[in-house]
Image (cartoon, rainbow, N blue to C red):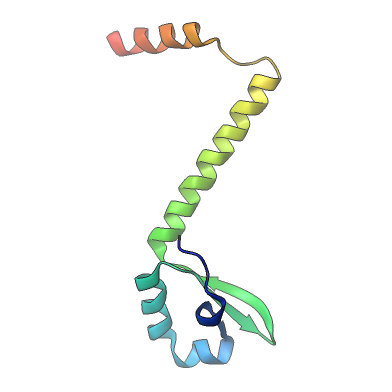
Length: 93
């Protein structure tokens, strides 16, 4: 996902209502999210669907890494050589 550009990517609800199609095109073309404000405060984010999916995949990966770190810290990890043996046995079946 591209970095947000404050001067281009923050719009009021009234602007959004009148130009929905153009803002959807902007989000799709730039791959940057659009912040929609209401009464001067952020209210919603519009994102390209593929960028949203990519973000969800990254979050899942980071969550898996955090789970792995917690397991290792608790002594629930598997030694490298043991893991290698397990994987090689599964592959050779």
